[in-house]
Length: 145
Image 1: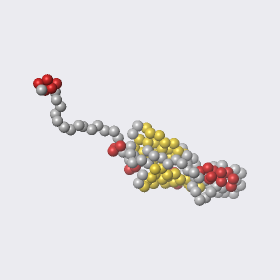
Image 2: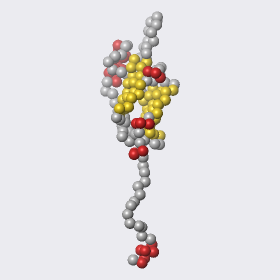
Image 3: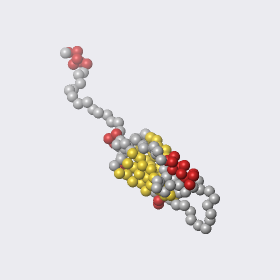
């Protein structure tokens, strides 16, 4: 499984968020993730605390998995004193290998964690291959020869 985890602009965005307070609006924030293999399935978890389940969008096109979500900033008659939590759009793309069954992805969202389970494709699972050919020689046939 191939995961694209590098983002050369993430540090620049983080610095801009700290200096400007509001962050950059041209580029969605990146959501942290963990990924691992459990037997014949891959598990991927994304941290999305404070994100509504309805704002999460998961798309698969060819072997690219795209997750988008949005955390809406609170509005009201108040003055913001500190703003360290990222608000706005979150986005993440993963390039998945051909050995995964992208038709059978399962998704669950609980306590701010989006969990995706992607099974290994049948064609990628190990299998036994029978050997075709002549009838095996028995020890008695070998002695007579």
